[in-house]
Amino acid sequence: MNARPTDSTCPVARTVDIVGDRWSLLIIRDAFDGVRRFSQFQRSLGIAKNILATRLRHLVDVGVLRVEPASGGGSYQDYVLTDKGKDLFDLIVSLRQWGQDHTFTPGEQHSVLVDVATDQPVPRLRYTTPDGTHIQAHDIRVRKVNEAAQPL
Amino acid sequence: MNARPTDSTCPVARTVDIVGDRWSLLIIRDAFDGVRRFSQFQRSLGIAKNILATRLRHLVDVGVLRVEPASGGGSYQDYVLTDKGKDLFDLIVSLRQWGQDHTFTPGEQHSVLVDVATDQPVPRLRYTTPDGTHIQAHDIRVRKVNEAAQPL
DNA sequence: CCGTATCCATTCCGATACTG
DNA sequence: CAGTATCGGAATGGATACGG
Image (cartoon, rainbow over all chains, first blue to last red; front, side, top):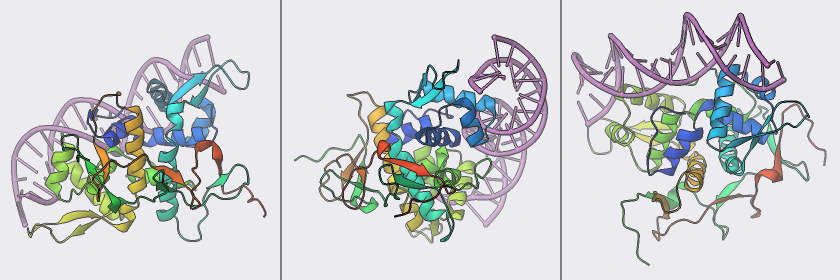
């Protein structure tokens, strides 16, 4: 979708090449919120129909969305997240949490994540290792492919 | 930076409006990797100088980067992450992990996150609540601002 | 080395009109 | 309702030249 495919060995760059544009990210957000139909996406996003069609086709092509026969019994199709698409959940959460922290004034209202069972707001989510350690920027660095791995 | 500022009550949309474009995300990635100088960004990204200058200025304007007097003693300036910018760490991690999982063939090499202390690869990071519960897509939903909050 | 200014090609986007 | 086709304007991107 984007300009020059980065064909990089950096996973960040590859992800950005696939879903790193405004409309794709917002479509995926809506899909997580249960939006399935063409017209729903269009109203929610205020996007022109032609470019919505282009983006949906792209997201289907890359395996983030798939088309389903129909939900409301209509003669058309729904767009739903594949497993690959559902794995973008963490990405959407990251966008959401940063937005909550840095783009709203203290008293300003915004949508929130709630637990489906209790309907109570979800507390701040943090990235942790399997043993429960919270990982922050200064704990890690990136090792490029050409760097030697540390022997045990 | 982007087309129509979404002025939405959705934190995802606001974040996307600020840093949701290809170059900004890659610049931020590089900043986390220790890139500070104009020429370093340029070589790393293969980006034209004029648009690099535009993006850096934008990121400074929105408070993600700030300019520092100079690092190498030169007469110019460095671009470093502010605290607000460092909070984008989780977002970059999300992009990276999804890219690792879904854009590489099994044997294909890519850069990896390593622990700064041990130089060992970091295990997969998961979003958890403060009490250690791992949260996935089906555990939550989005409550819009106009929905009533659940009374206790 | 660090940008800014200019030019040009390409892409993107939105509005509209049209088809099944 | 769910798209496709077309068109014009705007933004983006790259190359180059220039100045601090």
